[in-house]
Image 1 (spheres, one colour):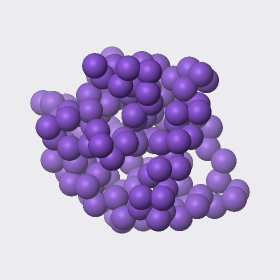
Image 2 (cartoon, one colour):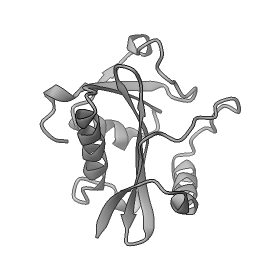
Image 3 (cartoon, one colour):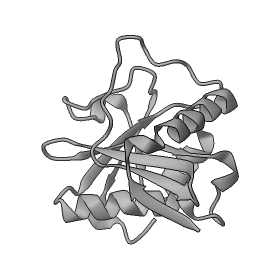
Image 4 (tube, helix red, strand yellow):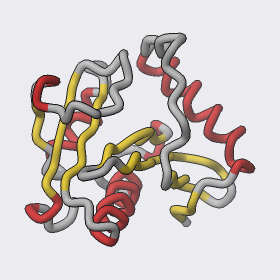
Length: 155
């Protein structure tokens, strides 16, 4: 059984394993040493029983939200599993309840499956110049997306 719960520090060891596994899988670059982001707020954890299998968070800005830390263990990816959809639906519902209709995200080119998922979920690729001036950009991100929630039925 998959459950989506709010972050608790007790999940940190599992989140560290998840992050390390994804870094190895995609050979992703390390974040810039000066880039020290705070935990998103809210931040959710996907659990299979007691095992951390995914995360997603939101940075709330004044007029929009930023999707952060959407990660999923390899064996739980894919449309048939539905975990990505559950995580994204959690974000959409929270944003809607909090009056935020625009979401932006940054990602890296290596995450091809994630890009396909975002596009199938209604996100549109944009140029970095189209981001809001106060967008909290991760220096390793090189692809950017946005979505207007009022145009989304469900991911």
